Image (cartoon, rainbow, N blue to C red):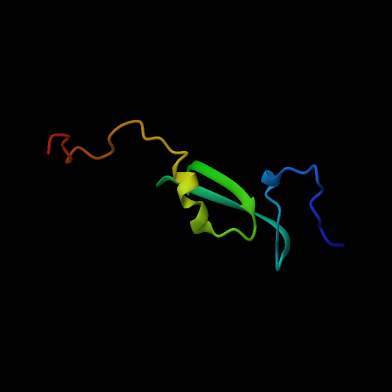
Length: 74
């Protein structure tokens, strides 16, 4: 049976056709401890690099990041 999107199915349902069949892909940006900071779900045939900017746009940094050895007045 071949999958065909129905006319009323939204484009953002993230179902894609690949050699493995109908697939989806989760594009994640994580911090150093593996906690998810942002994610985008796409069809399985979408390349990771094409969604990098989209996921990075979802992240907001609360303030300067650095250890005590990095002064704010450089």
